[in-house]
Image 1: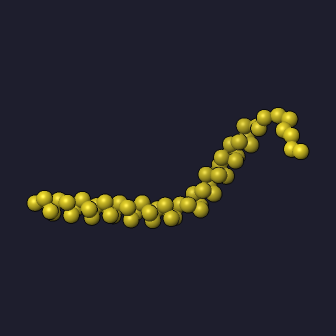
Image 2: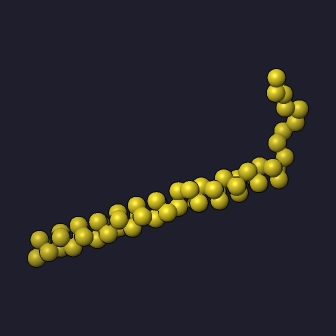
Image 3: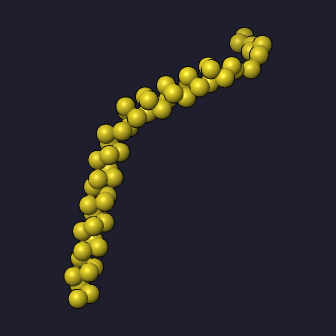
Length: 55
């Protein structure tokens, strides 16, 4: 049905990778930024709580 006569060309592969990275950042970028911001804030709060309890 679909038969490939030759391998994929390098420019086609590079183009697909660029499109994938750009679209991935556009789709998943903002939620990931929010996730890491909340995670870092939580870790900082936990670290402060541990330091206060050990004093």
